[in-house]
Image (cartoon, rainbow, N blue to C red; front, side, top):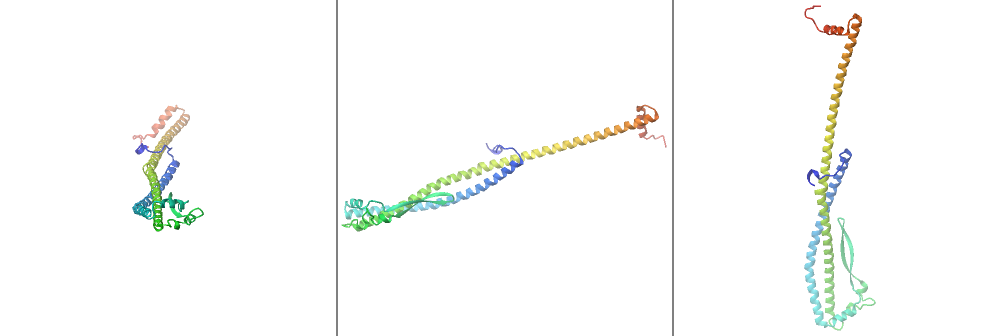
Length: 269
């Protein structure tokens, strides 16, 4: 349905007109709020997009540096450094914590990295990282570890940005659909309904006005008819009185009254 046919099926009354006007005010206010929300989400979306581009550019450099440091550690400490590292590590020292950030009513997942103090210091089951590669290549192993920790930090940041990016994308699509629905479907339908109710109320008012005019005309004609009937009745009563006084018929008395009402030019007095 489109145009004037796109309206709600309601009874055209004054009460329903007030309800429709209230609904139109609510729809207009909701449309404005959703539009502001969409703008705020779009601004945040573009900011996150810029951060993702920067994070991906830095990730390439970081991954290159970590791969190069791993090659240096293998070259200096030998291929057996992998087994040494695996034997000295039982739990991860760099961990990821997740939380939510509220942006214009949308909860964005955020990931942050942190270093577990127990695992970083060696703990009950881990060897101290500073003792790894003590025989040879300890400096390169430490540098390789630092480079990979930095790479993990960049990857965690990129994962957080990518997740927030996808969540914002879905939220913006949903908000835009709601804005378009309010702007192109709900508000026009309510406005058409209000126009329809106003037209029907105006038509009812015109019908009432026409009905009142007809009633007034009928009453006026009835009053005139009653006045004519009363006048005729008064004339008949007067004719009866004249007939009784003069002893003539009622018709003759009526003719006398009628003739008496007319002026004779030949008679002076």
